[in-house]
Image (cartoon, rainbow, N blue to C red; front, top):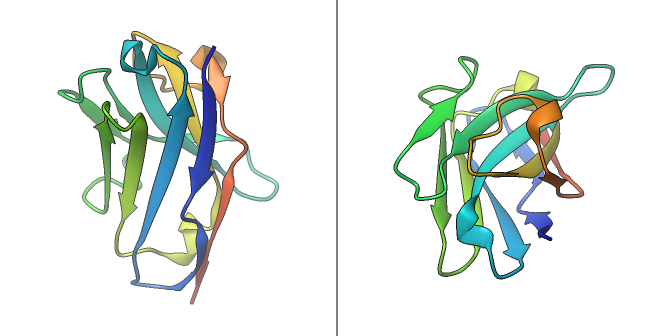
Length: 123
């Protein structure tokens, strides 16, 4: 069992940055690949970024490639999403996700979800 708690969301102007964190509980955090998804009002939840259990592999949605960076610290049981050059279209609730072994890139593959943190980017 893994519990995930996100933090770091907020209101930022376009062009600004935010660093989201996701703290995990449970003894087996390092067995899980992690991901970030987001959901804007009226839209489906979409994949943003993912990282393997070791941190050696990462994958990004085209819409955030070059602006966002996912990382993890297994000793702290925490995964991060550094979000730079934010745009109004990045406004959404951001969810942390865990999947045993493989990076989750679609919602149906996620084993555990966090409760979400709101990111609002003003123009």
